[in-house]
Length: 196
Image (cartoon, rainbow, N blue to C red):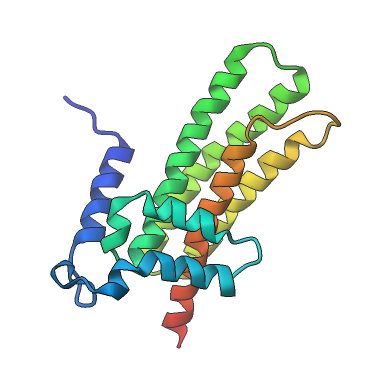
């Protein structure tokens, strides 16, 4: 029996979800506003949402996914969460590799073990966030994605507790934080639209 991983299933579902035409998102009638949705969404988030939101990171992350050019705002949020899921999965592999390396001091090992636990929890939390988002429970999705952002920050701060220790996960933590921020901004925008 062939085993299909959760990630493969999730990506297939994501592709189907993003390219399935809806009343307000017909693929056959793409217009400039649909094609430019990534730019407009990233710009709005950078200008109105948060001082920590990175427009450049948003654009480069979302535009790297071809389907982002033909999706709607819901699809962009899902892409952000899927990218966060991929980042967390890859970071777990990186942490396991670093832990097996064997040349780290005790403090770094403990910090990496803490990060491993944080990232493992983040995987479950992201999946829960996607499920909440897909069922339009935006407040629950907001809480879940916020927790993922906090996990990346907590992991990074764990290394700063000892003077002179440099986090080997700075880039991974930065990426998870900002990928989550993309999804969080869009969730926030959609929750405001629903409450009007």
